[in-house]
Image (cartoon, rainbow, N blue to C red; front, side, top):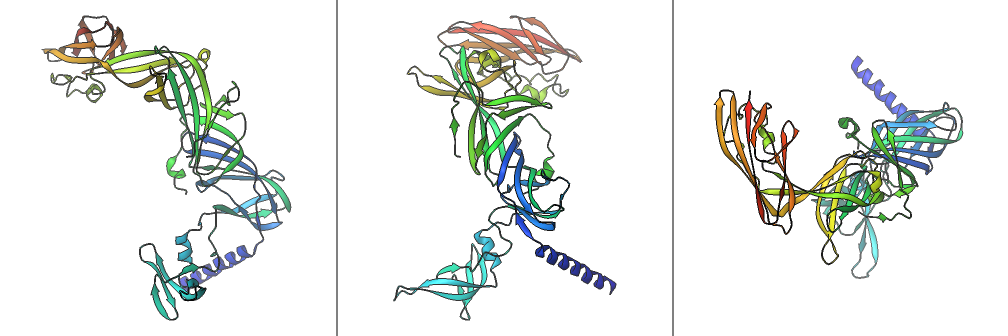
Length: 486
């Protein structure tokens, strides 16, 4: 009995509160008077906007329209710039029950609707009333008309009005307490998803592969559900830590903009341990739009073409320092025949670069004998500070072939093994080339090269490099003996 009375009392309180809430004055915020966006390269953005709101005294309902459908409601911050202490948001509702055909049908199940029909004899239109019984994409409409059940009734369905609770665009509804009635200039900030950016670069190599021209583009994509006009824009590059499980729980047109002058459009500064790029003008970013803005441009950047033969490629990483394989002679006999071709250059200011480059894809082109640009490869770069070297892998050389073989393997003692490796590289190009031969002492961390036919350089604990020059139609053979002990 007591439990029943408690439930009844609880329901009465809820109903009473809802009735009071519905009777409060309602006002709607005006359009944005100012908006600034900070977009992170991790599908996350911070929106800061200003709006004017005429707020009544005491408690009222305030509607904030044109809110992104991807807003993180838990991140929202509000303040009155007119009188920060006068206005408080007591309650916030994020409303995203948008109008759709399925939602409209669902709201009118069991209610009276009309069907507009055509009299075939008189060619005049007329309406009949009925009750909508069910609606589905697979089964169609079912309605009761003149006491009979009709499946997919003839005519065009007409609904009397937009059902309560459905809205055209996502919006916020606040319960606000205000001590100073009148117009307030307000600031609203929040995080939202599906508003992102990434960097893309285009490079053009010269005829002898010694210089390149490079242009970097910022590609902005807005799928957040709303548009932003005359917005301030800042971009953050870096690995910002984001707790994804909290944020993700909330619900192209390509435009190339040519720079009007040599001045960069973005100003780069530091933000904590990240890089901030501020657009030196305001811009528009419409919903479901992709926009490109030039980030950087460099001319005649010194470059170098590099050939690398790595006979084991990345296979050695699976065996590295694994005691189960260190004395197995059958491992490490694999041979990759491909010789990779790379282009290297330095991110320095004297070449027109020299700002921290956000991670992104670089596409490389070169003119053919007819002077037409042709695509020759692409690669991804990570965030790259200024004055650091970039190395782009563009593919494999057609006329250079490598061959790697294990010539000898023996156990010197229980804890010492020795193997001899032979590498052959053949050049079928019309000119001499220089090739970097990479090898990886993978069997164990303690090793030494006891014999070698060509001078080598120890790059790191798991990499050695043999630089060799090979003439036209020539073969170069490199051998070395390595001893492991543990």
